[in-house]
Image 1 (cartoon, rainbow, N blue to C red):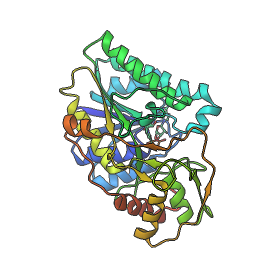
Image 2 (cartoon, protein in one colour):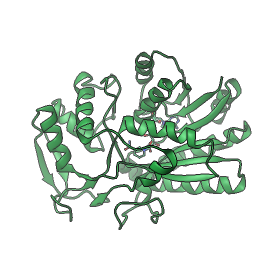
Image 3 (tube, rainbow, N blue to C red):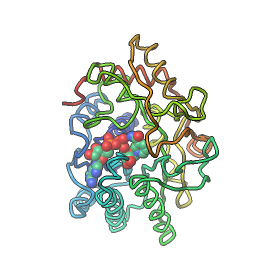
Length: 337
Ligand SMILES: NC(=O)c1ccc[n+]([C@@H]2O[C@H](COP(=O)([O-])OP(=O)(O)OC[C@H]3O[C@@H](n4cnc5c(N)ncnc54)[C@H](O)[C@@H]3O)[C@@H](O)[C@H]2O)c1
């Protein structure tokens, strides 16, 4: 029996991926320091799947704790989610972000090397495309970053490429997520942001549940159809399936490969608000305010490579995303607390 190790497995995308893996009969270990999560998400994942996983509290900055996991369990591949991810916070605390994300990844890869485990799926982000000029964004688009969070992802992409050049035994899938939203259809697991949400959907659901009185829409004068920013929202359950496909792809990938995970369809902030209101029969009060520094007008994926190499495409619609987000929030007004 061999395990798939998920660093950051208790987090938003990690917990949905853990569920998809258990449902596909994989053996799963989560290694998470619970900085931005709790073990409650994994308890629910086990309840939903009817299978158990190994839930370890640990920090990827702690090489000894990581090594212990590899010592104790046979691991066939690692999916590396563990990271800090708030763009604004990364600008205020860059050293923390670089240390956690970059040093954490270096530690992980060193320990993997030491134990001869050289299959890795890495959580990258569309943020590595910076302010891309051409839409949809293909994997070959130029990369740049405008904040320490994005820089940390870009640095890790470079580090992983160098690692593979130094040792061709490494097989690495770098997945560039677009904008994950939604929740498992059960409403039992979902996104549980600490403090003020950075992303649109948790903001909308917190307004809907009465935690905040209105939504701020940052920027209404972008060169888009309705003036608000356009993003490629992807349902987290589709994204989770993408990891399963990536694990399969690791068996055949030649070295390192970079793959967009998005739908290929851009929706504006107003599209999302209107869809949320219509599907859930709820009014979402909002105000149009100034653009947020660093935000771009539009960003959506060319998802054709994922279809070709992973044999994976998204299945869920915007309606599914807004319905499932609300189902999670209304059943869990305070998240996992
Ligand atoms: N959610 C998004 O919008 C988005 C978009 C693109 C990429 N990503 C990337 O996907 C990954 C998962 O994101 P998420 O949305 O699930 O975030 P999340 O915060 O819910 O999950 C990350 C998990 O990693 C854990 N963690 C952080 N630092 C750690 C450390 N040093 N040691 C052990 N565990 C640690 C946190 O406690 C958390 O459970 C991250 O790498 C993120 O950068 C997320």
